[in-house]
Image (cartoon, rainbow, N blue to C red):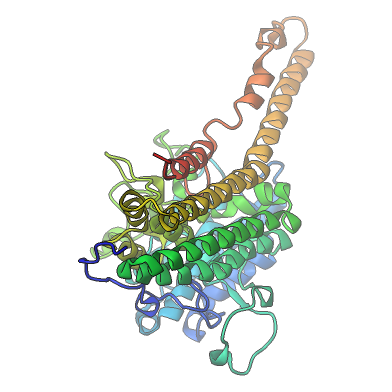
Length: 482
């Protein structure tokens, strides 16, 4: 049995061309830069101050006057720093990545400590260098998954020769930079880092599989079947790693303490006091630089999200899971804007493979009904089902860490509303109509039942709708027995 191999082999995922390491995948083999050189030390010091002062989000319930004053002092310090050039950073991708991390963390601290009714104007001392760094890196000027996970780690033990590392032990790394310095925030990022590192095995299977598809004979089919069985096992292990986040990250701390910091502009639900419209993030001074048009046409600025993981996108592309929509980019496609440029190129290269895996399996099944072809289809479907089960686990985590806390917050808000009305009525006396009785009895229930409606992820999408959609699309990728 020989299948058509007339297409040239794009092969093979030449990892290094795309900034992907065969030992660590989308994470760098060596620890990222932990601090910028002296010229930009003022940025690092401001970030240190924000963390050491334990700044609080401006929309935190029960925010004290002391906390508000502390945040304003820090923001004032940021506004006073000089506008620094980035020319010398452009000689090093590693320094640029650290600069993007530091400047976006500073920006998010600045924005999210503002009062909810305050317009968002990002001061020029960080807005201009951030836009400049973002342009060189071809990344949006906002905190991304690469900032919080890929380039935000160091070794727990010192090594005199990190260049000699043959692989990274997922248990031997820790986070470099955090918003809250809580173990829960660290555990949340490290969970994703462990998934990325373990996923290297899946990337290597993709590379070997593409070679076998190019050969296309009966032996290649047998080998490809074995690879897909292994891929299914690996995806199952990724699912276990995802669920392990429950061991070290408390859902309430994540939702109420950690998550507010990396919300993007498209998750900002507050209104501008002047226009009454949804708040926009204004980069002060950007209009004076004609070459800093970094914002996409739809003005989307999403926060860091697991949807920006190139590994998960690569699994989708390799297995043929298509999330695209006819008239507009899907959420998954939009999230590729937030990936490092070379990783986007990797996904594009993988998607342009002239012999896609799914088509090859379908062709093998239609051309030959022997045990080898049937085993190949079964192995393929098993791998797709493993990815579906991974997404089931993602829904479990989203329910535990976002939907559940959001529902409980809605319950508290509803109870507070009724209590406030009751207190107002009691204080006003009999001259005021009994407005508690005018509140529909279903109000509290409606608030809590509808708490999941419109909940957005940090990537700015309707969370429940998105998770169900990608899971269902994964199921549709299965090959039928017909």
